[in-house]
Structure formats: C-alpha cells, structure tokens
Image (cartoon, rainbow, N blue to C red):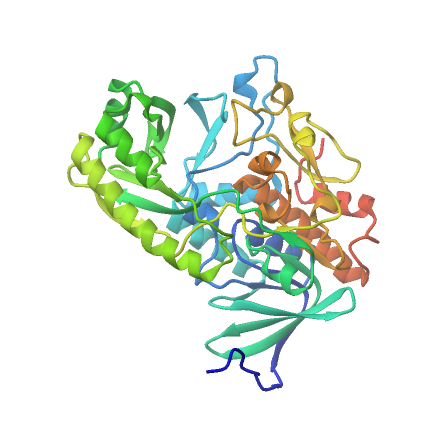
Length: 456
C-alpha cells in the first residue's frame, strides 16, 4: 500500500449559478438565505443533513437571547435587540406550537431575562417552509467539498451528494457551516482553539417536569425557572435548571463524570426537550478520528444519564431517550480570520461601531461576566468579512477569537442576527457586482433597517 493516491482529474457538472450561495443551513444559515432571497437575490442553500436548524435544534436548550439583561439591572430599559427575520420566525413558530415565545425568567435572571424555548421538530419544519416560500433553492444531504477561486474572489463551490461530485457557481457567498469549511477551502486564515467540550443533546420522555422541579428544590439546587405555554396550557414550567453541589452525592458525582447538565427546557408534558452531555476531546472537532471516538462515548454517556434519572429523580422512573442529535454538536471548530476580531472589552463595555449590523446583549458567562449595566454592544460589519477573500462572509461561532467574547457572539440568537446581516450584504454585493469591502455601509444599513433589524 502506498501513502498517497492520485485522483484522476474529472469534469464536474455545474448544477446551478446563483447570486448568493449559503453554505450550511444551521442557525445562521437559514436567516442568511432568507435575507438574501428577500433582497431579491437568486439564492441557494447547501446543507449536509436532511433538515435545517443546526445547533438550535441539536445542541441548545433555549434560544439566547432576543433581549438585553434588563431583569438583572433595575435601571436598564427592557429592549428587544433582535427582531427582523428572526422575530418573524418566532412568530411563525409560535403559531405552529413550536415555541412558548419570549417568557420571562423567574429565577437566574442575572443570566438571561427571558427564555425562548423551542420544539426541535417544529423548528425544522417552519424553517424549511419559510425557505421554500422565499424561493431559496435547497441542496439537502449535500456536503461542501471544495472551493473554486479566482485570485481573492470565490466563484463557486464543489459539492458532493449521492448524485455525485458537482459544482455550483455564485457571485457572493456566506459560510454558515459552523466548522468554517467553505472559508478554509477558499484559503482563508483560521485557528482551531479547541477550547470547548463537544456535546450531544437528548430529549427524554416518561418524566415529570413538576417532580423534577421538586427534586431540585428539595436538594437546594433549583437555579433556573421559567413558566409559559406547555402542551397548550399557559403558566406551566418550561425551563428548569439545577446546580449540583447539594445534590445527593451519588447523583452529583455520576452526572459530573458523564458531563451531564441538569438544565432543560420543554414545551410538552412529561418530556425534557434538551439534556446536554458534554465531552472534552484532545484535538479540534475537525479531526475525524477524535470525533468518531467522541460519538461512541457520548452515546454511552447518554444511556448512563437516563439510568441516573431513573435511579435518583422521583417521577423519572420510566425515563427513556426519545430524541438525540444525529452527530456531535460543537461550540467552536475553526475560528476564521475576519477584518475585525470582536474583543471581550467590546462586549462587556457595550461598545458601539460605525458599521454595526446588529445589536446584542447576552453573555453566556453571566452573572460572572455581563454586558455593562444590562446594555448591549454592536456587531461590526467587518467582523463578518472573511480576510483575504473578496466576496465571502463568516457567521456565528466561526468569528471572535477570544474565548470569553466568543461566549457571547456564538449564541443562537446572535447567529440568527449575523445570518440576516451577512445574507443581506451578500445580496447587495451580488446585485452590484462589487466586493464586501466596497459595499457602502449606508446602503447596507438601509437594507437592514428595512428588514426590521434593530440598530438604534
């Protein structure tokens, strides 16, 4: 056996040419594609699974966060920072029974003021419905396998599916893969910090939400609580969180060993929508072999997690796994070099920018680290522009190198806002046959505000 195989050259069929091509149909990619299509761009979305939604339907609990941290700061105004297409999506999701809406936290509101809990399957369906209605061409079960470049300009994407290896051309591109695949293929600079555990999240049925609350409360561990619509009835528990220093020792020790977080959300009686199992791996989650080992270990841990619920938590004696993510979920893989790198001082200091494309106020390290005075910071346009590539934007968890700042910018609602901004910008540069750095900010701002984005 030799160390290398030389693949023969091959003419790839070109299956489409678009104004905007979005790689990745996850949390940000859905909104990038919707935004681009609504600006008038002929838009394609490539997603390697058979559905859209990404981390929001696989690895999260609630969506964080449409609002500033107003409940923790009595003098702070209550302000919804993210509206536009993301809020339209929430409205559609609510009408379909897939969210309880923006429900105020009763406990732990120094972490987040609201809980926006979602149903994973309804979220997938509503996102697909909206994409189809907007005229986006979907390439599902399709992998981004390469980039076609002309100097510093990206001109196309190589894709692979069961239809074979093909090419798609475009004028502007958005990388929403989460892993930074398209940016890496296009030659962008990146690092791989490997500074988070990977996760698989399971839905658990056959449980009592109220008895779980009683268990947490009896053991001094009730840390998060929110009420809203559950199984069609208002005023029910939809979010619960427990912190384990006072849990029974056997339960506390075992959950720590398997990395299980005792925080969940639900929209249905007798069901925990999300229970996360965390695992630290020795290398970046772009490493196939390390991820294979992690997939096996996480599923073993999920089985153990359900056993622990049955053994220790009243009302969970008949617990069973009803849903798992199809693969590990990440918080970061490649960190893509962009024209601006958002800093922790920017986030905590509520910094505003002259080219901002959204406002955001959630910090996943609260209450230890919070945006100053319950305020908000701006995300600058240049933070989405991939350095060294003229017509490519990066979104979501792929931007922001500092780990603590990234604990804000990587969150789901932030990714949604990045997506709308990047998709809008991509449509404008495609229409004008220009590049990301030549786009006039005033024109972008006008389009964003017209799309409902909050910038004041």
